[in-house]
Image 1 (cartoon, one colour):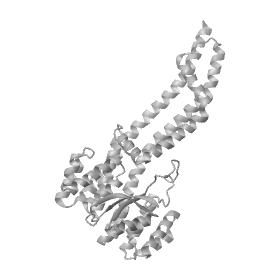
Image 2 (image 1 turned 180 degrees about the horizontal axis):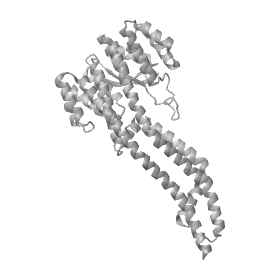
Image 3 (image 1 turned 135 degrees about the vertical axis):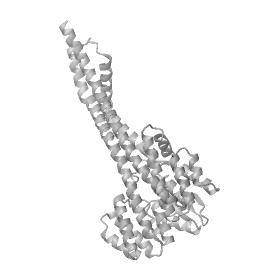
Image 4 (image 1 turned 180 degrees about the vertical axis):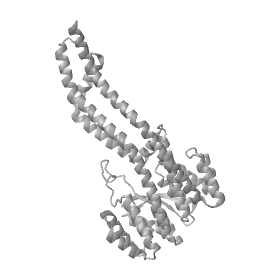
Length: 409
């Protein structure tokens, strides 16, 4: 038996969370169905997973975002043209280029043929279809507007993928520079400095007094040379453990809280989170999902634990009769424009339309923020690299200059 963590809503759209034991994911879904609960998210517990497990990096049935966008757009076009859902899925299965996607579609076809709804079939593949995806499909099937919902999903995925690519692009340059700097530092300390230190000592004699900077560099070099065989595994192990810790609920909360306090970076994090909230909540509301269910799904899709908790708290207050705009206005995590636009949407009954404009605005703000941070990171990294090289060069040149001065005298 495996332990599953679930988030679901009952017949009154009240959010329910908890755990249950089942043989597999299908059994867990069946158990929720018997309780008249509609699943929003269901994940298998990882309490017995090895700390060095590679499952987080090579997820089963993982589908790339561009492949999922193409699949969603093609399915939308076929459904809009009146093609039966099973025939559309079979056609997409036959023409899928990705083996993972083909495997997922094959499983979905079998479930739909057995009488399951498309949403219930998709929920069995969380590595391919997110909670937002599944719940929007479920809402589209209930309202009879599946083709329109699929178009919204494709657009939303393209926007989300665009933001991810921009953030990765902005981070790739400093990561490459830092990697080169680290490799160069270890290379100089292990292979170059010991040789230069030997030459300096030979020239100066056994009684030569080396400058403090040179002694420090030689000391670091000697330590690295003597312990390199366990230093590198220790560094790699520390990085792996840190990444594993960040994936735990406690570690993720600490990390997400920390990045919201880092200057420059926190601006990007806030704007990305607000853009995701606005676009996801807008799509769900436009699909006819209730406010409470939309808030719960959006909370788990926003990508930051701090914002997730804020939205879940907001859902509780909305459940008690408060307007969402009033609740959001009191939360300092959200810029004032969000609550103001929400208030306009609540007054006009066009919350989904208004929030799309907010999402578009913050997408542009993310672009500007990333460009600003990139412009700052480049000179900072160059200064760091220059400083390290300068220290090493100074530790070598100062004793040589002193020896030259002594020879002249």
